[in-house]
Image 1 (cartoon, rainbow, N blue to C red):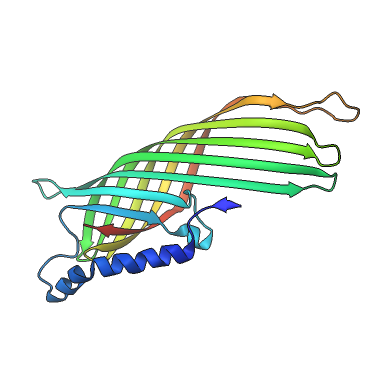
Image 2: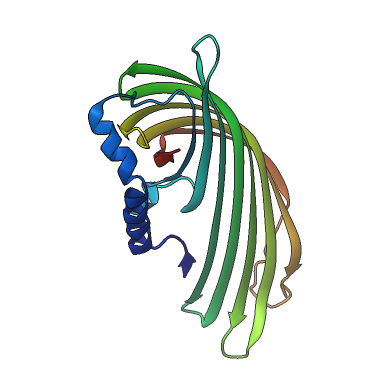
Length: 231
């Protein structure tokens, strides 16, 4: 079982937000203000989880503070947070019951430069500092004798940085969508906090749970597809 957004709840939220901004949408018919606001707060989320193509957690929130300097240069401070919780149970052909519980937490903070290309669209680039934490608890239980074959507590820490490039289109002055690409560099630190594995039985072959540290370079042409609301 994976804990994530329910698609029906998500669509219901969109209906509520659409009603909340209805008066603003009606004002837009006069054409008296630009589609791209000079400054705004923005709250959004990545939608790629709807088609199972997400690289970010399904439960994620993006907050931007868009602003324009005195030299008419557009910028934004950005913050994204995300969490995934999952639990999986399975029974193997050797009568072992696998229990796998995973917790994933992520936070990213950064800045971007924005360049309008027409009344409703802009391009932007920027960078994020990020940190991710993964906790994995895995147990393999012998169902016939109700004893654990092994019990592992695995922790992964991933500080990193990324360069982002994106394009945004304003559907309404209060609603926008954007696609974002990313090049990211992360330093993965993996630690096994507890390992309980009876390896001294005939034919076991042994198991190896070794701490590791690795640099990871990631290129994601479509890293996120955000739907955002501005106010």
